[in-house]
Length: 97
Image 1: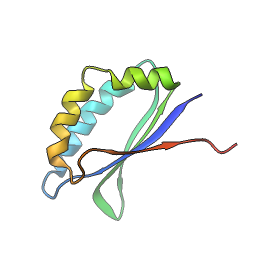
Image 2: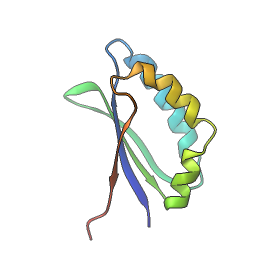
Image 3: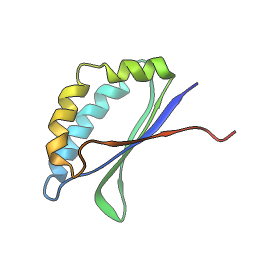
Image 4: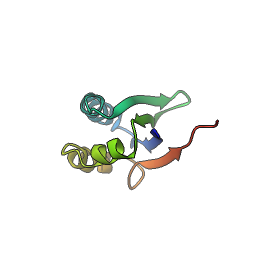
């Protein structure tokens, strides 16, 4: 079964350009992962500092491999001081069938 989630965070005022740079670099790496099917980054139209990342992985194993990728830790360490939350807020999604 596919693993689908929405990651959300809000860039601190004035940090938007750096957050965008970081997330775009990270996006390139994640999209190269064998088990990644979708990694799309959005900002909220009414609140451009609010980032939403829609992620889909082939299955739970692919998601676990993503979590263990060597670039994830450094990305999160660089991102954390630039966002309002303590970390990205993750919402796991299930398909309606």
